[in-house]
Length: 145
Image (cartoon, rainbow, N blue to C red; front, side, top):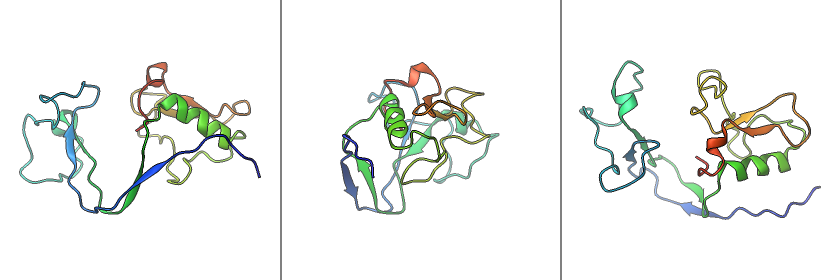
């Protein structure tokens, strides 16, 4: 079994049903932007996904979850997470993230089409230790989402 010199510390969040907060992506946080005030707020929240609605481009609600979870105690950049993924899976045998088993991207949100749809790409036919790459260099120093 391989050993690694990396340790990720997590804090347990044990408050299922906590409220989310509305944010506007790629806007520096300030008292004016968090929480985001939608142009046309929905009558009730959460709203069903409606790709024809201007609300979709107005803000997003993050943070509210119906279950206990753990969150990283320290900020990890997308570049650091790429390095981690390539260290734990240098052969690229698993195109899904560890623990969550979420694919790094899907066809609907393919970062090859839109580099701002996802931070990390999974490359099938890459050299050993290079299967996880940044979708765009702009993501390198951004916090992993």
